[in-house]
Image (cartoon, rainbow, N blue to C red; front, side):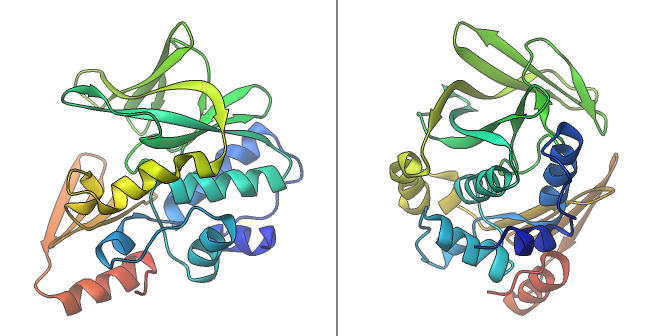
Length: 248
């Protein structure tokens, strides 16, 4: 596994030092260059949480992935570049409250302070958030903040003109990538998992976001949202290649 090839995938030069400005650049580049996608699940291709396997998929084959893959491999890159990184277990909020432990993988990164980094949650913060409770950070008009109660932290999000909503709950206890394997398997195989219900491929753009969700291509730029119906699997294949660099 070659960090230089990963950086080329992100179209980023190697940082001179493992500091916060470089972390912000890497984080944003990852979200714009590497899509969040669950396509292997619908192709019945097993997702294996082994770094060489993830490197082959994301770097060599120019694919994306979901949280365990994207944040798992990004953590490896950051460590290779000199950052201190912890893999954290997060419980994603749904209608009934937070989900199970290991529902999501997010990252704590030390670089001139502690940061919450996450390149595997789809439409979320573009640059790492300072790990400070109560600090409101605005990115592209959307506000984010972290709250803390004992050893539990919660990420909150507020889109323009909307209410604050909790996104996920986590602690700062570090884990190993293999600890996430059982819930990763659930999300690949169980009909109750949101990832088995529909195909999605999405990435951030300099203007907003581009998403291919089943039979719709959705583009957003600020408050403007456009939808394009996808007429066939052939068109879908073309859109994946042209807009996301994904060849199945």
